[in-house]
Length: 254
Figure 1: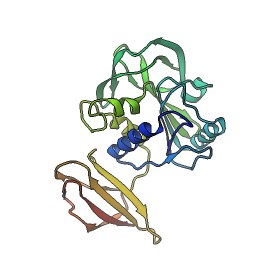
Figure 2: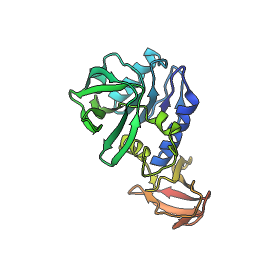
Figure 3: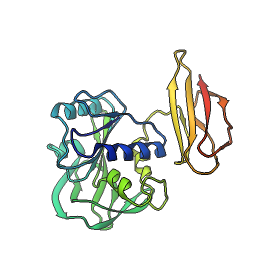
Figure 4: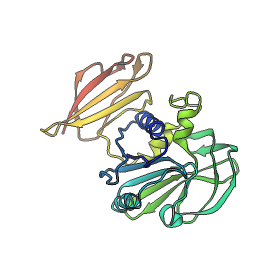
């Protein structure tokens, strides 16, 4: 569930979140209302100082996280009260503006810049990425039964504004951050190819329809992955190659 702020550039953020989620292999819904639907993952993308969420909405999301959900927040130029309690980080302020940096993740590195450069220090959060100076830029914090991820730059703004940012280019693999935050989600069907999207739906009889769609401009070989315990029946398409701008449909039963 992507929760968009009450103001700000919703359309660009929504477009980036949708594309990155599809590249990472999961489907996302959007909400900008005061009452937030239940979801296993909440995304607050590229939050800036002139964008805001209602207090009761934030508290509601944190309650869901405490019960076992995951929350991801990427920071543009935003501030959270009770920052250390929520994110497990200590903020030592903002020390520079807009400098070019390199984000170093476990999956690789890519360049970025942000309106504000946060100076974060881990208190009881797990550090997942640092910039070239050693500053913490991505961290994971246990919150009740759930998990909160904090990213120290506006990834979605970077993706939508950068050259080929929304293309799953390995020189700027932004979607891999979404793969990390969605790691605990229970997907009955998936694929290890950012150019192929997977959408699932449940039928009244309990079986699942999984649709694989090739968004690339060429045919792509693929290997559909199904959760253990499911039997897959091909209803449409090919199980080895997806033609460009086409797909395959499977029915999953236990």
